[in-house]
Length: 244
Image 1: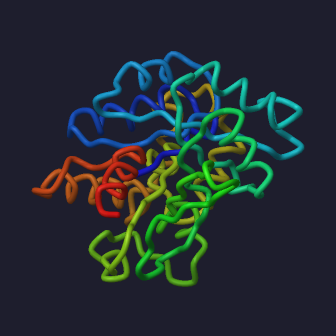
Image 2: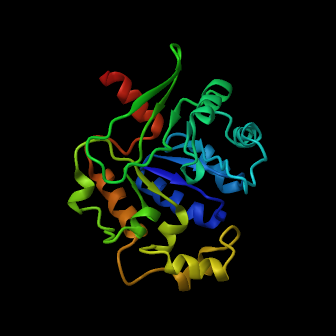
């Protein structure tokens, strides 16, 4: 399970993090900024791996140049080894820079929705330098845009063969988003970078399944699994090396 913080308030981050801690479910958080809630994630390494979520677009608030953005994020999470780029903006030069100059080992910036038989793969920059890539299988915001969205984890399309990384955003979990309507209404009235959970109450979807109910179904599935309490990206990398 991967979670992109996307600059939301500490109340939203804490709401999701505490649910995972209570259920003892491991996950990788890709952070966008510094805050007390982010520091609590960093202080819980037995449950959470903290990776980085660089925004390499021209509108980035993290820096004006890619290396500045990387320095900004790695100052917050200096031990980060995983990356997932905002809006999945990527290129071979960016990946090479992140690996060679910042020792990023794992990337999850490829999205292959509902694809059979996904496996990790290695991208080499020289015979001795590579980055291990883990494509993402499902994302809450993209599911909202599909012609027939399904927010039931039990849907058979979520149980095909292959690696299945599920990607979430805390704001969509809390709002239980099933489309962008409640999210857009919320953003037009509420500053989600500073708000409390109470501020969001009137925008929460309570009439249908959404990202929040899917998240809880997945969490309970992992909790009841005899295999493991979830895997971080670094855990996946260790398992992949053992299988090779």
